[in-house]
Length: 227
Ligand code: SAH
Image (spheres, protein in one colour):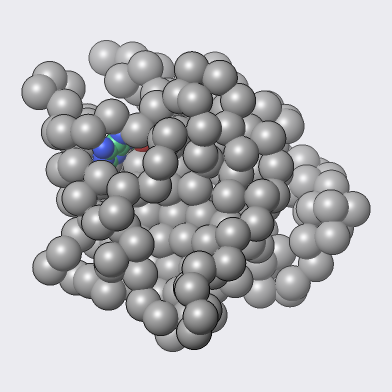
């Protein structure tokens, strides 16, 4: 078994994180992420639960960390940038492609009505579900499957976030995005640097804007056969 951050958790650890969380929230304010709902969501989700054991006391450092199945959890700032760009309303149905550790989904679940999240690795989905249960987050629905197809049974979505790199956002995802919906994805060469891109579906078409240079693990079509 790899070093994963499975329950049980020690409430005293959350207490120890208070300084790190306060510092992180200050960093977000400096990045002009000041929406109290978003800050409260980050404050409410203990990131230490989602990172490897060895990194638990450094969970809020500005860096991505490795997780199971050769994947990674994004740096907390980047999760916040994506969250802010999605502009999630309390009644929104959100689709996430790439559950990974479950951290982004957990944060979104504090802001949205329901979060649907898909990963191609069963192992990752199972660990993420364990964390959601520990945190009593009841508005997250998971799926082991191929996120490039979206989740037709629950479409359409108000917001879609892709947390894996892709040369091109799959058409299926745009088809499952509601009018006036917003989609955020890292777009570009999967082995290099991608542009974190925000697509806002407006009456006259899709308005595209680039938010940042980022590096994500690749979006790989198909369900993982192992793990
Ligand atoms: N959002 C995550 C980080 C995701 S890392 C977090 O908060 O921790 C990217 C994830 O995308 C990986 O777990 C990878 O398995 C998943 N992924 C890659 N291609 C996929 C696909 N076609 N369908 C679903 N998930 C995919």
